[in-house]
Image (cartoon, rainbow, N blue to C red):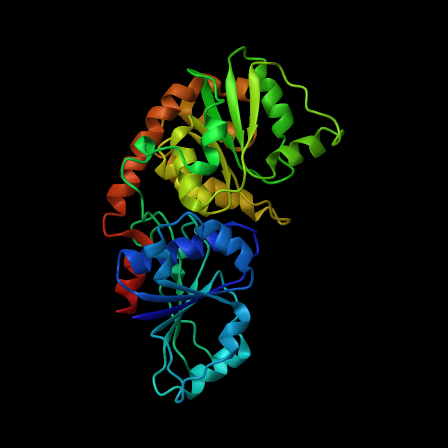
Length: 357
């Protein structure tokens, strides 16, 4: 089938990351024909860099404005149109669909959520005045939700060679030292968190994703001065890397701090303990979303582990929960295995194709 995916970037990397991963799953694993229309091609192309050229060549990446022009007469509509995260279709594109001999199916692809209410709306019709059929599709962890983007997961990720952009930095990491990757929003008490980690007396190499060092310096109150942390904490800022290179990084670290949706899922698939710095919302709706995920994530955990993980996810200092880290590591591997078992049908991409069919 022919798919058009519309992506307007709100949260910088996350929205583009989900759309790109969905597109490559639909094409490389399911033989679909996909176009992406994006309002921020530089970000999308950065995430897609480093991808196998053969895979990338199968996806037609277009600027948002290109959707306004359709030189085919009569208009040849796609089979499926995806409004990623509820973005509105351009008026001229929608007008073209209305005069096309064959009407597509429009899917409002929502944000991933563990909240129970999504099951009541998943795959439900959203009647439109223009008459083109439109449906809600909610990604989720539950059996009857839309699934998660589990594919493609390169096999043997931890055994793969060091990606070129990370090679020089990786050689500077200390042997037999715990590694923590950091990708969080401004506002996180990261400097205080690192200082508390240092006070525990162990060595840690902290891999900072693109822009995190600058955030740390701003939070210190002295953005023009070098950060002063004990020698036990070594900071390693890295350049912007592609999705595949970031997935490799998550698999190599002992603990990951992630944000958004795509990195949140990939941290779980890495099978390591992690903190999800969920996007903060003014009405505090993010707290409900985090609690719903933790209810699922910790359903089979001991009370001690539940308290430890919940404290960590709410930015309690490491010294308050680090005694649970070994149990958390075991739990992370079990959760990873359970995720793959529950998504054995292929996850989000496969469920979308099945629903459309």
